[in-house]
Length: 504
Image 1 (cartoon, rainbow, N blue to C red):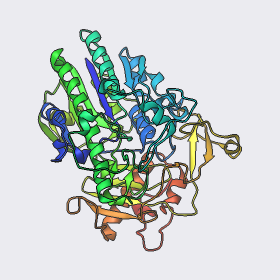
Image 2: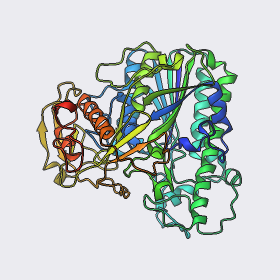
Image 3: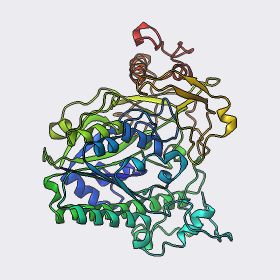
Image 4: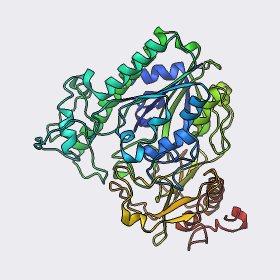
């Protein structure tokens, strides 16, 4: 048995033809949908990048206990568990966050790994003198300008190199058994730096400053500039589609469909001007960010060209991969093996939880989504044994305020460092107008989430389910307090009493 996980970053479900988009060029995603099972109600769990990858490893929600950070010593890591059970695991990625402090314990869980350098602001090539950065809208950084100078052709792009290495792995190991390959391109994450051969597919007549890296901020650009930036994303998406096609070609060439599991997924989406905002890392976590694409080909079932309505999440990927290789998921994993639902349908869960540390906590049943806002004046903490931020270790002044606290149910008896966290710890995180406001949407009648509902009975039901899922995750007490779930806030339903199941 062999398995491939292809994990894109910031892959927008609503920009893919299998999910109804008619303006982007994604023939290979359509080809994949005809060759696999398409999941129509897949949601992220923890946003953004590394929190999502911790869920990929551990099969449990990350965002209630920890911000951006590493795989912890007490975590169950899916690739490591596979390795311990005799499965060779290999990671190929140009995702620069793996090589930073806050991601440095992920790639070492695999049997081997390959790193492609140069994406975004990856501190790769050295140039002492400042490079010239021309007129632009949005973001532009010194290191990104240095890196771009080394990518003069499509074949030199990190995205292309990742898939070239994947092709090499498949060719070398096509006759071997018992391996897991994780292909993880950073794209179509911003910046949307794309060769002309793909940009030319989306002409628009724009003649303004370069705009391929939007700020994590409100949309203020002209309509022409906005449309241009969306076309740059689409061009990069089409380049991703072409790379996907090469993988599908390799699977055809080496007859891998007979015994190789293929999962194609992403960590989250990206706002391309919807709701008046660019990018991610901001609440509320609208459908464009949280509702993600997922495709699974399982050779045991042989189901192709079908769709599933089951509510699934990122936390399901680890137990799915473990189950494929006959490895029993450890009890701390909260996700579900998607093998049975891929084979024939059926439910997976009634409700799913998602959000980001310190921001809205959201719950959905697939039709309704309820977003519970952070209350001002409440506390937030990181719980960890590896005090690392995204690109730095915790500073001594931060660590002076820590305390040692008893274990959670999933920390294997380990006490933890409890470290106070400011609520603006993500430098790029700002909040949309929905900050501080609880929001309820009917996705069937209002798929663009433009008309929040006022329905106290429905809000109470979803609020109770949120509390239940938080308790199952062994959420710390301050998480209930910051959501106003320890007592009924004025004008909100009482979610804290016995009807809601009480609090820990």
